[in-house]
Length: 61
Image 1 (cartoon, rainbow, N blue to C red):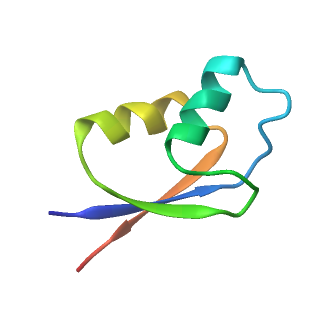
Image 2 (spheres, rainbow, N blue to C red):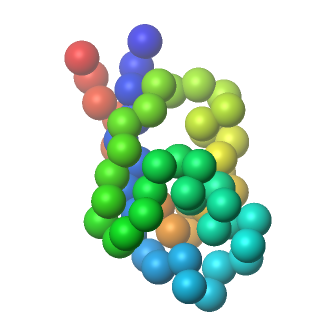
């Protein structure tokens, strides 16, 4: 199964509380922190909510 790397590139200071919780649920805390997740519908939905805060890269294994 494919994996994706999600990196926080913008601060969550001015973000909506729902978006802050989504970023935290993705395992991101500080700017430039990254986490690797399985590519599935649940993770893609979370990323779609906070596309303005994160950068997504596909990882081929």
